[in-house]
Length: 167
Length: 139
Image (cartoon, rainbow over all chains, first blue to last red; front, side):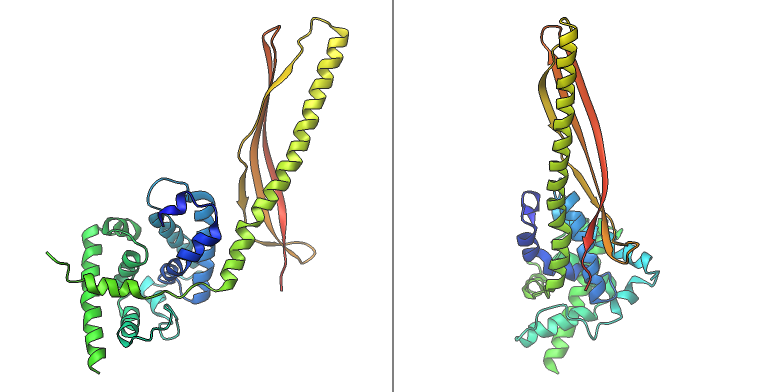
């Protein structure tokens, strides 16, 4: 995502990064439609006002997404806990493209079953390309806490995949 | 020391997040492409005003010269327009029931004239703040 500083073509940039940004937005929104709204608002703000700023563009765009997501929650008077928000429609969401490989499909399903606080760390690290320090800043937690949540998530994912594979 | 989570992390990275639908791209185009066109209109419009202002000043100088030969004869030496700052707001419903997105454009014009003979200069600094509406089509 480093080329955001110099890129002039938002369409090309969004085509490369839109999917993972939407997955990040999905972590803090109640529905697919909300995620699209948040992604639109955050991306417009990032592209017009923030992409030329110094620093890691990943962190900037994630900050923009998180801010838009919580603005939307406030506007909608949805003050539910984040864990509840992210877990509301787990059965119906389509976070990933369909996978033919059963292990990959099991991994995608297992990710959705993680506790929200672990899942957002995984999503920010893998698809946000953030370090534990940057994740800590985003979530207002220490880097050590972010790293602990990551380890717990990895253990849980491994357990789930193994259990599903043996079923 | 090897990272025991490396393979699992690689497997996660191999998953492909679902791409945003074309509707999202269309909405982004409405926000990110439209301001550029609007900006062009504003700049062209503003350039006309700046040219008219320059002509007025030139006429003033010319007329002043006719009556007072010793008056300064200004020459345009510098004209600068800052990069416009475009701010889009949330769509609003107008009185006729249609929808539009308010847009605010701000920029500064600085024009400088100098008279080499009298070593005097005339500077025109003009902050501009325009508020308009971009019509939105609803289906």
